[in-house]
Length: 416
Image (cartoon, rainbow, N blue to C red):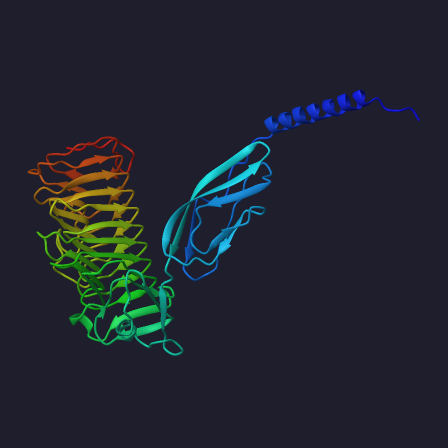
């Protein structure tokens, strides 16, 4: 056999190595680096197993994540972050994926919270048979909140249900879970006074003086979420949200969304010196059974504000109330948008007292009685509402700004 020339062999190997390096460089340049496609947030609960899968384009060959919440690890080969978190914290974790083309990364907010305690109210088989008993048996805190799950049934509470902070009172659906008080018109059905982080959802709340009364005090602010309930047949207000100390530093705030608020004796919603977002509700039948309703009584929504609170009223259907659809007085500054306000006996929207004002856009405000107009502006208001892009048929007052409004026939209608 012919002997190989050592010099030729070495030269051939060197050429191969050089070619291999060049090819690798070319391959690396031609391969785009990974792009992370997994979510940029993740919620976990202390003491419960939690996982997050890093996903990315362009075929990663390895993964990483740092820093990780206590109790969790990452597999560098599969990109799975897993474990049982041990500490309440929010951690910004940089997750990454690498291939021949480089490394792609994403900041992911890992939120580790405490699981809320859970108690069940049920006619039988639960922890308690009334909500009042359940509230007496729990001591919720910011780090140990509580969900009171109310199973299907009709619950006649012995008095007012006085909620506690950090409680979510959650029904099984408003069609199957109802609450009332045994004291009739002399007691509220549900009360939240001087509390924080309270939620009421998925219930039918019927009767009482007020369906839900929520209020700050001289020493405590109050915050509440009221969602996806039916609130009906109260003697006065379906929901009354008040700031107890009007000149103090403690505030009252409410998120009222997705409710059916019908056939209450006075206003569907009464706001006094309260900041609120009111969205996606049906508010009708205000003044049910009453004969004294005027423009400022029995409206769908009544607002009495001191000028420092904000009210956002969007995407509601406000129909068939004996007063006006929305009545705004004192120094109310409200944003009223994307609502249907129709067939209210006394009028549609009334800015007819002192310096109430706001922005009224993209609403349908029609067929609101004959006593007052679809929109009323008091002539002495110093701050004029902006009324634009609405459908309405009548407006009274001597001041206002706005444009692009039309009547029901599509003809332009001017703001006075």
